[in-house]
Image (cartoon, rainbow, N blue to C red; front, side):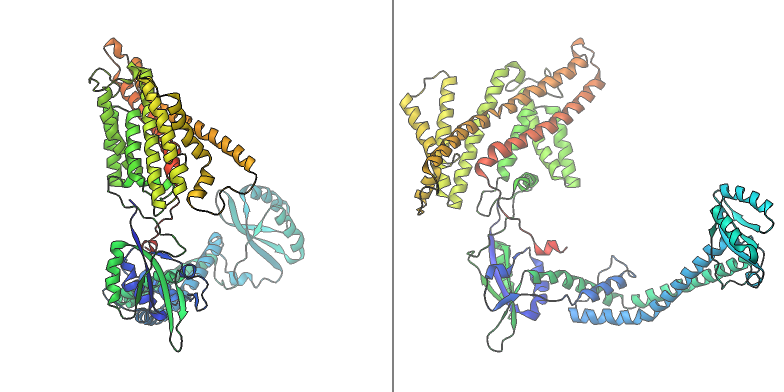
Length: 633
């Protein structure tokens, strides 16, 4: 069912909005409407626009909290101003420690760069400071790929003006330094470049041998890491010394930040004279919740409360409220569209008709029991709504399995309590069509109920699923039943009256609806000739839709036959007739049929729900109920 809603108008001093949200509104599921849209273009009303004053403090609090146990909760109740002061004080206290951490992190980064830079050349046993004093010899550190190095060796052997000193190597590169007289530097550099020698610049700060520089950098790096760890311990101790205050402040600021979005729905108004500014909120609540909230707010002198009569420009949101057994079927309703607030909730209709048709099309005691068990277990432990639907559908599969006398495809184990679909194929198909006609008539009745609720009297009287439609279609179904049962049909005049008059009313539904609803224009604008031509075409479409919608239900019987036929094939392949069946084939066949046919049947039943029944009585034009509290969790 659609839960009944009440619209509350809440107002109070502008600066008090956060307290009201935190103390009262956060305890209820409320769907807020945009107050500016609801109030219209009033001169003294403007949007509630304000910068989030808690954002920076909340972000700092989040960083402080990472040093604490995330599972703990603060025990102090505090306002936003107090929480901002506490976070600011602790942030300033740790500022010096964080500054030292940043300096150490920069040193560590530089030392890592040094070690990475000098590590490939630790094989050079020569002080780097002395190399810088060379006056007639130039040098260059770098690396070269192994394949190019073998070609470079031949060049070095033949060239007396360069020397390459190999420092380190791996499977891909050789690291080293080459020396060249200053007078031959240009041509030698060009040759090395042609061999794809990659230059590596060594910092001028290095003085000792590469190995000594590397070991010294590693020592300093280890020392800096220890100092950084000590600062981290000091930082944690400093924050933990005010743990409860920080946790409480963080929770308070997080709450105020989440609630800050309430301003998107609020409007502000200025009181006449020297009065201050007031916020205005409009929110939908369930009637029971609204009554409790009213009692709480009436005791608060800073809050002004009023009930709205629902005549605003906005429609109530829709929230479904069904028993736990029916909850999974709300998924199918939501997929089509939520019911409008004054529309019937079709969840119970879907639950009954979907599972019933599934059971008719998939009647098997054993396979149904598996669907029942597996579906309900998945729904219980994984909360999968589709699994819950499958579980309930499995109940009807078991029931029709007993009616058909079928268990895991064995047709002789159980006696059929009703019929075996394959014994009389024509009867099975005709019963399916009759069952479909009954569901279509039921859908028409639901459409009449929805039309009365919506006060749409044209739809009630002249729609193809209204009173005219149910008289026309119902009389045709009655004639078909009389004919099939061997009884005589009513007089031709009676048939023409019972079918012709309602059908004519359906064709002229637009002008007749305007007449009933007392509108000024009876016929739509345009040529009346074209109107009647369009009405005739639409009438043909109505008659055709009655026929096709009814015949569409033949698939209910067809799939009942299909299930029995597929399991018959499995039993034949397993050699059941020979008396010694192959049980592996039987097991695999049952799994294949249950999986494949269960999927197809589920889709086909959903198609019948949407196209043959929902389209006759249900619009699905409701807007969802969006709880402000849950949106911010």
